[in-house]
Image: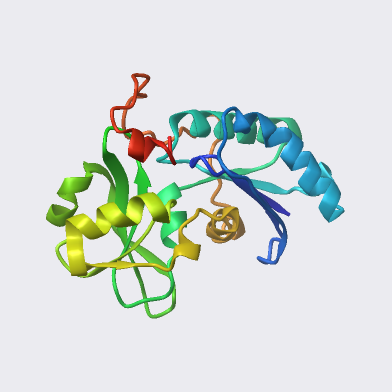
Length: 235
């Protein structure tokens, strides 16, 4: 049983998957002040409600960033603690890769976006190949909203983690070159993290819990946010 965790976005979630990929349980919680403190109670609830115990977990998958600075620290600390205590393998999954996998199958390149504070976003570029496998085309980058046209020059499918806030900015900067995934795809499903971890689990391509680090891509920003509109929905 794989336990998949996402704390890289303000809407955190967790899921249980059989090692053949069958989902067994899933919890998604909205953002809120101090809500990461509900991680362990939520895990206990999910296990009890689904009829499993913590001893049924055989592997832990965690969204390793980029994303929320606080969320990444809290989530990876929990994942490492469980890995060490239960002697379980640990797999870190790129947040943007998992988010890109939420997009519908398409011939267009796929760009996932996550808000990065300071009026910037984390993004990358992926494509779906003929075998319906997600292929990374560009590495993760952090850039300003207004710089999107310099990076995405052709028609691109976008998916993010907050449709109401992010979609208008993308459309404003890119116009008809931006194709938006349907709104119900705009959240990071912890099941996607578990699915991304499955092949690595089968190949025993695990991470070292002692050396796995969050992908921050920038130092933490503890100053007041000068863009309250963007901050209203995301960290």
